[in-house]
Length: 138
Image (cartoon, rainbow, N blue to C red; front, side):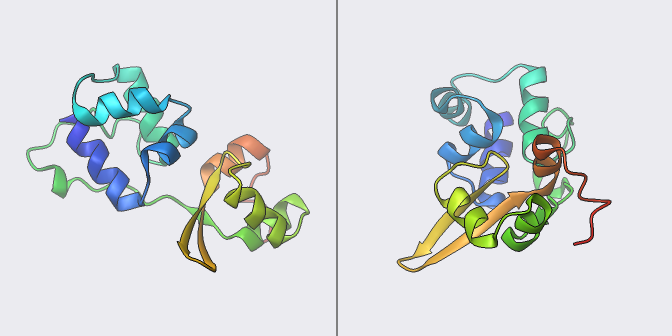
């Protein structure tokens, strides 16, 4: 069932509804309706969500007797230092942009009063910035 699969992916990736909305471009109210089971997104929307999360486009559409047995490809991630080097900016600028929600390819989570954890989706970074990370020295 879509809502259960989406909830599990959000737990696995440590995503809030707000972050999922930012990564997918889908409104928070729609995300909430999907998670409650009130609405189910179209197949094309399910593909968009999967791709935004770095999953196989058909992830939510594949039938499985036991969803926990479904394997998904982990999202390739970049560190702020790598993203900064590729963009020609400092790692601190990347970190601040992630903290402020400026960059659409990643986010920052405040884990304590003085600590942040950063997530940069390498595929989204590549698509949006048009910097082929495979050909750059990391």
